[in-house]
Image (spheres, rainbow, N blue to C red):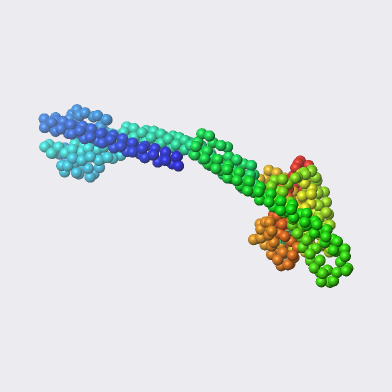
Length: 461
Ligand SMILES: Nc1ncnc2c1ncn2[C@@H]1O[C@H](COP(=O)(O)OP(=O)(O)OP(=O)(O)O)[C@@H](O)[C@H]1O
Ligand SMILES: [Mg+2]
């Protein structure tokens, strides 16, 4: 905008200066030319009255600005020089002046601009014409236009540069606020704005922004602590309940069929409750930032095979473990992971595949370039043959307590909708990402992407 303003201003000032100067110079030259032509016409009249020859009369005239004269006397033409004759005078001008009206006209002769002044001399039945070359004026105007244009250009560039530096300086605090807001939205609640001491307006903004983040952090922490406290408090009565239930189950034979069924229902729900409390505790730890991570360096192939083996142990009876295929390029890629968390991720995905997709068909490990293209990653994809996850649900399934269509259709009362939320938390702590898409056959494919610790040991094939 600064540049544009400078352009408009300099161009309008330049244009105004140019046209004023042009008007003034042309007017000046026009007046001088007409004056000189009148003086010469009166001299011609005196000469012709005194009976001097026309050639002598023309030769004695003043010729300022390199002017050329042409005399018309009694039907004949007498040019003052050999270069310009009567043919150069426009027909209309000629007729007008000979008929007794003085006139001027701007013409171009051999590429040179000229002012032609025609003055009738009725007392001797003559007409006097004079050509004034104004090329020098055109050249002056050309130089003036070029200079003004160059000055306008420099002013515009200067305006743009000043505008850029001024807006950059005044917008910097805003871009800092925007960066901080993005960092906070990304989960970094430690981000704060530097306190601006020089600018009182800015100081108010930064202090209220930092206060808002403090409050937000405290609130999140309070909520996470509350969930964690509740889960903790629930654990001990649940353990007591579970122990009592074990005692009851040991004497199941003595119970009536109705009581035995009630006991089985109670046992299933207690199991589910215990699991939910465990999951909630785990999630609240990660929310409050108190989750402990034990990172180890492991080979991708070995880690995935081992995790699938562990995860398959807890699968319902009759569900066969999936095929594990590892791309040779990533077989020995080094991953920095918390084995327990990764095993939980795979176990949850295998359990879901068993519940909603008829069992996982395969687990594939492949290389991948990260989004920015800078780091190498490994993708572990768990595929099944089930109905898949609809596009509308693909984000929602990772939300807490979300139970999707597949769970509803099956009427499985066992899930709580925390499994994939936990998967997402574990993967986030491992600095990876997780998403779901579908296999070519339509089944669900859950992808876990993890960064490679040292990519020098493997190469893309
Ligand atoms: N392999 C899959 N195929 C189809 N839908 C799936 C699959 N895995 C998960 N879902 C859908 O995503 C929802 C959320 O899964 P999530 O594991 O978070 O919860 P859950 O399995 O219902 O309960 P929880 O795992 O806590 O016991 C499921 O209810 C189901 O609708
Ligand atoms: Mg689940």
